[in-house]
Length: 99
Image (cartoon, rainbow, N blue to C red; front, top):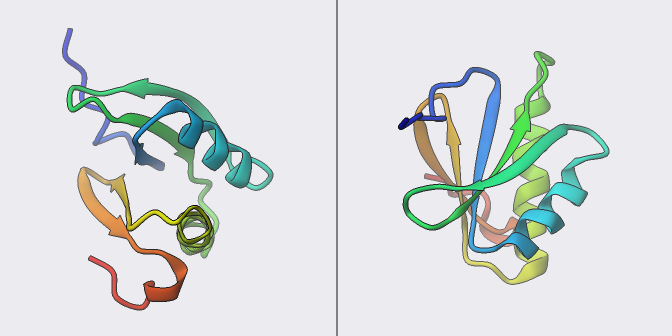
């Protein structure tokens, strides 16, 4: 069965290169957000799902947290799936320009 996770509401999916990154980002966001186990998608990247509660500002907080996390790890960017679309989060130093 082929299931697309892109259209699940109130769920943010982070695309990560390996399980170490999944664990590290999960530990960073878990105090505030519920996360679920990683799965590997067809492209070979790992997905970390974060349940987004219906509280105004939580998406911005989550993305700022991710932006700081990728800056600390020296990553160039992080792909995020939300509402069936893909977005790129940049490291905190360059986060004013997002795609």
